[in-house]
Image: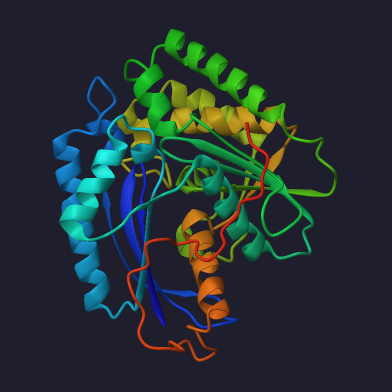
Length: 342
């Protein structure tokens, strides 16, 4: 069957279509995405402006048309911190449903962390034992830890790279004073979050997900995306510290010329690098392995599991009963994170 996943993030809005059948790894068929930073459409009261809402609705209509035109049989749609934490988030979701007939499931920070960890576990398998995962988004930073399919500990904190850049860094390049203040804020916030986690028990695989981690790894010498998703990539703290110092002295234009950095994300790469550095230092981590699967893939795998359990998805990848539908909840049935969070 062909499954569509509509991801409304803080930096981009993205529809991914995958082909899947029970027991098989889902394979990407096509995608449709656009750079849309909802954080840049916030007014002084923290509400998403009408211009941002209009752009979002236009994209969702395009995405539904793209999904139907390309034979999608099921569609799950979700949003994360950009809408969840906006002052008028509920009103925006109501407008989206009213004008597009698409219900965006609003994921909590804990659910983001848990589903991203779930994707990492599925990608890495059971042989790696305990996993500690870091995920840096535009609006929030998720940390999850565990030995099972879902994490035993997970937390989401407001250290997204886009949010921090907007609220803390001034100047281009940023002033040393604003950089120093941000670094202190990040370290304090990460330390508070880490205090709720258990002592890490070796062996632990420490992973990094998200575009920010992939870009940081590429900047520090990891293989380009053209090498394929099965190429192992790592981010080492000594390299990260060196490049964070370099990026602090760069303009946004200069950062955009670095390998693996797009113009859209160039401004927030320094803040993202500072979050990654603080997390690695706080947890005593020297190296992070980059995992190509993250939140979207976690929700895809969770949805496929549910379809198999319901008897809707068969081994040949075709619906077992009737026809599929636009499903309002990507985590049905019986989604439960089962984590301890701050």
